[in-house]
Length: 122
View (cartoon, rainbow, N blue to C red):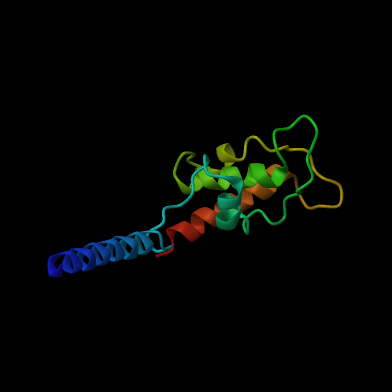
């Protein structure tokens, strides 16, 4: 009887330790940057502030909204899948939008430059 109680406490302690280690590894301090294949919700939380000035209205003939394309470009830059903002943002339109400064492409390039600058800070 005493051995079974000890075994139960041992198993319970082991399970608790596993849960605590898993929670520690899942914390933001150990989390990697979400890449271009991550879900939009994950990328938006990570890179959405750089693309705030992009439109969230879907444009006919393009894949996704300018905002989602910008966020995907930021993810490519963050994980070094793309070397510079110019190539990462190439999917966005270069046509100027009336009432907004610059084109979606130019705003994405500026956002990518800011992201790279922030990533280089210690």
